[in-house]
Length: 134
Image (cartoon, rainbow, N blue to C red):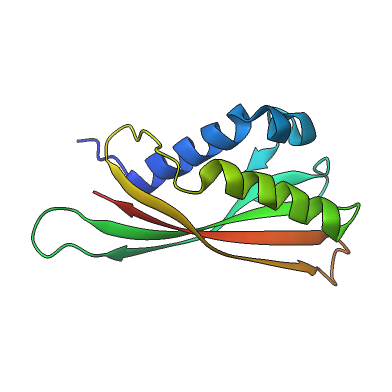
């Protein structure tokens, strides 16, 4: 028996939407969105960060909330990371994404936090989105 994950459907749709944007694709390339940090990856790039899922259902309706972090990494500058993050936010905010085995009710940007990672020296702009899925 195969079960489908609405969260994986959401991440797939978010990745496809970001990479379909010509501005984002021109900056990070076709393989510039990753699900883990690779130490020798070309900069800049996007990475899916932490995902937290909460069951909101009151019966068996399958309603869930997913808090999804998307990270923009840059070795050049905070400005580059924040500019890339702003482009991602513009594409994903209130996007009507089609999910393979679920229905996206809402996708909203909650906040963006940027910083320089002391350990790597890289700049990071981290966006957090809230998705409601059934």
